[in-house]
Image (tube, rainbow, N blue to C red; front, side):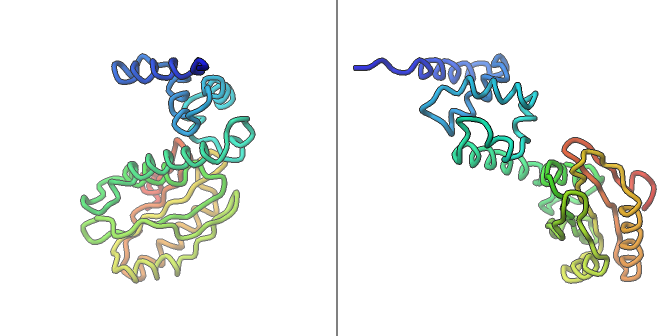
Length: 225
């Protein structure tokens, strides 16, 4: 009988250590175990170390675009599916406060949801949260999908969607793939136009939030709204 591959025993020891004292595991060992879920019959330590070297941290690996991950030997559909599942899992946890059970009391709730959902995308997307008169979320959905540096949003469509859902308040959000959440002149102009349309229809524009993977700009906090 052939001996078992050396990584079998090593992986089992890591799992035991994980259960006993997870915080003692190194970053590459955490990633090694995660990769092992998608690549059970291969030593994943070299790949884990290679990914961390390339992307700098667990967060960097977690947020790495699929196109870049595909370049690494050993990363196939199974790993890509697993990573996508994990990202969606954590995104939905971040979006849980948007479930309408509790009123939104600050931009922070929408910021975290938007950063998780669209902050790391390579193209701009425009999302909208509609709330009732108690500031409870009625819906949270994508309104427009754009290009690397532009996601066109039309004030009339924002208002039409709000009226269709009988919403009394609107919170807008879009991402800046370049990593800088500061609003462009076009962002500011668009925000003011939408604010005007909303006001004419008796709808409150509560905020427009621009996000990246780890930062945001709130028009309301900046005093524009």
